[in-house]
Image (cartoon, rainbow, N blue to C red; front, side, top):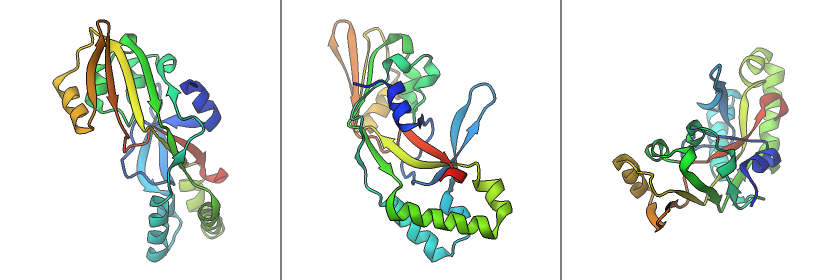
Length: 216
């Protein structure tokens, strides 16, 4: 099973701390923070800045939403050795109350399974590139200020299953237990020393491959 570091090296992917369940390919992200950098969604999509008429924009939005998920090259990922501090647990597909109850030092195993991806390619990508080229020709100022260095979500990755094993002394908060119930998760002791948390398909992606607008 590859490590998170190997996964990120192959896909040039960044972990997401914030990602809505209805995230579209082409979403724009920006880096925030001086000392601790993090990726935050802007709430805008590439298609929102291409000066398209409403019908074309909505057609593209529907097609972006319809891009199917396919199995990623890495079906399983081991995150354990790549988690250094509790801040690393702030993942978009991990409920915040649950993440707040966990401590990196007490995690024995942390795995994502059934990893799938949605990727911009084929005719849809070509069409978006053509719209971007036309914007560059018509409105250089907007292209340079908004899109040239924007971080565009080119691929997004979802975990079909999450498995976390902890030292049995770990105590989950009431809020964490409620959050687990909402996603049909389960926490159980598998032996005297280990507590195991599992939950299934997450609606929110945990990582994205980002490209700058100029490289799209």
